Image 1 (cartoon, rainbow, N blue to C red):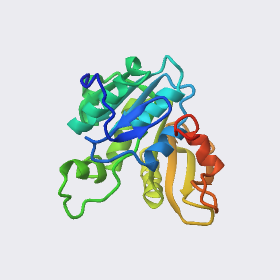
Image 2 (cartoon, rainbow, N blue to C red):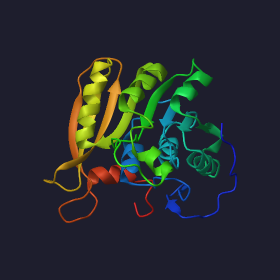
Image 3 (cartoon, rainbow, N blue to C red):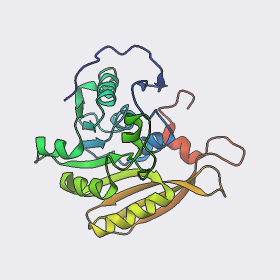
Length: 247
């Protein structure tokens, strides 16, 4: 478990109402994908949450703010700099005592505690297929599926999820449809799908997906991040209220 960086200077990062996310040591910076996942993932009744590929820790911190005060949150990242930075961000937040970071890949993490189970697992996973090698190896790990292929993620999550738990991810829209199909092959069931566009009547570019091990009636809906006029939509505001400084 990572426990260093107890003092967090105001480095380049992302300021929220109740916490600050430094991300200068992370290959992938704070972005809309993480905000969508952290603002949406159902955590109101979660007691044990796992963030796979936590990066700076943004999603885990948003869930810590939204979840009950006794919820325990674990986060895993294969990149040493990202894990250390997430640890610093957690310790500087109001919820540091119930958050832990592990510098491990998810397979190694499972082997450290085979009995661990989570009622909510979240991930903003890599989604670029291997192509031309990236000159930044940390960025390649964060972006390319060579570090965590989606069928692997589904298999690992199946070992960690409680019977009634949810696996929640954010992905590009087309990639997300492939992810749902792959999940079905591993006996996951679609619980919720939210197709996300930038504005109304523009193509969907992201999708929020919740999967369950139990069959049920899947919920489908759409949302846009902005209105036609360019201001944030009411749906997106419902995700960022309590986090963004102006909302």
